[in-house]
Image 1 (cartoon, rainbow, N blue to C red):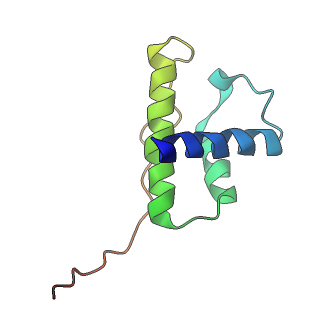
Image 2: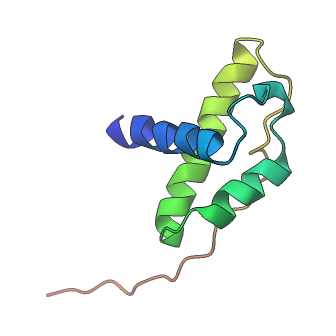
Length: 88
């Protein structure tokens, strides 16, 4: 829950910093999603956590009737390297 909340706060901060804080959330598009991730300097695993949490957040907005489309739908996860398991 803490990760979800903190990532939503980071997203809200980015909206404000990027000048999108006055943007109607229904107008938020995949282009905005791409810009957000281009500006976010994080490890791919962390970026995938953002994808998951923001996809869920926008899904809730759809369920509440605030928006009609989720800009995170069909957004592909970032590639990560698999680390081999180490057994001791």
